[in-house]
Image (cartoon, rainbow, N blue to C red; front, side, top):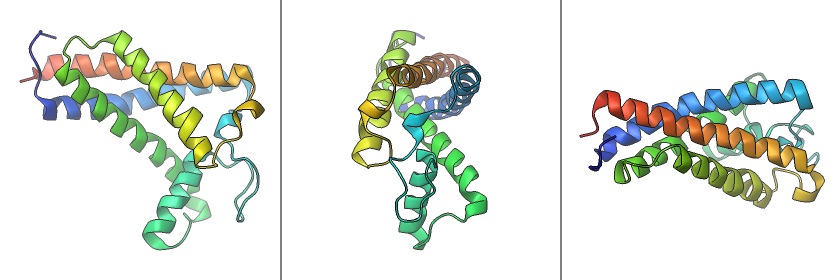
Length: 175
């Protein structure tokens, strides 16, 4: 990218698309890690609450909360998996758009910025927000290796977002 600032709307759209691709890269990372290390307990609720099945992923719990606000009801059981996926990708799209805006303001923001961004998302969303919302288990109940694996997933997300955003902005010409 050039040293001049990029159009922030184009950059946000580039980041949005990049966030989708990076979310898919994150899914691939988890498929590989799950085959090696098993399930992701940091994505499981603390226990059974209000009729929720123990072990439901945080994305499905969030989808239920959104559905309850909008419709007064949880997501129907048959739609829970797809609703959880939608929450995961919506989060990736939104975070990608924010990265794109940052990349417009700082055209030299590259892979290091993406890695730092991914680490920040992990710390703020996975490690802090899910626990503050009482969705994820307490930090000390999750093995250190799984915290590291989750960080790895977010580093994949951040670096992929940075690379894809940069590529798309070059293709579209940022101004």
